[in-house]
Length: 331
Image 1 (cartoon, helix red, strand yellow):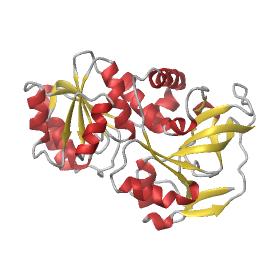
Image 2 (cartoon, one colour):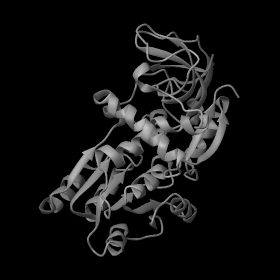
Image 3 (tube, one colour):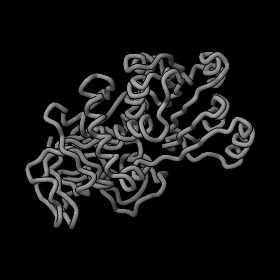
Image 4 (cartoon, helix red, strand yellow):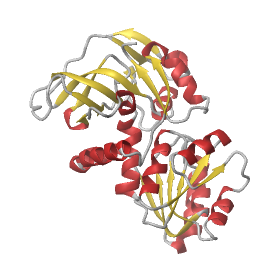
């Protein structure tokens, strides 16, 4: 089978198209013939060597896959060969076949497009859990949504709005601001043009600040989070696209905000899958319903054949993409 593997960290040149044996599923696993694989920014960070925790090399990248089960491992009884599924594979999805835990594979409804489905395992379910299980906004509260034209952010716009929240979308261009508004955001802030993002958030909230902040960047943005958080507010950090935060900056920001009793959550999707698989499966059905009914949307920015994975990574790193980028292993 064809697959994209890295043997060392670096630029897009380390993405190698290779031939590998078709893998065999072990106990509790399924093998999926991959029709579409989603690319996440975590894949880019893994390639660069800046993700945490870093997997051992060599590795076939990719966690998001949609396709058809063609082999079952021992003990798998709730799924069948020939069944269309969408799955988190944890690694190996940039390939024509991938092995996934059976508990992380979900039957794919006929009315959900396979390319859209391939963008959902990490981005879709992260957006769902942020807005429904980790820090669900109450009606009338204000949400600050980082990277609001990206894959997770695109879905958060609609899912938070559906819960009755006012959504302030943080974006890096006017084109992305327009897209975020199309997807449900009430207000947009271009952080490249706005000199003081927290001040603008406080202006939009009548001086109070936002009750919920979903931040996939972290890095030095943590100071802004505390500066624009309402009393008793909730910050969720779920990504490190801007790098790890400075420890001294973090402690200083937290202590300044201490009298307002902020809640800070570090969220990783794997926790939802491992620690409450039933809730995770229920979340899939609710996400499918939201997409089907138009209450949330995930635009597909571009589709590349597997052999052009380097071009797909270039597209993400250019920061012009809006929505999801998909690989087609059999194209």
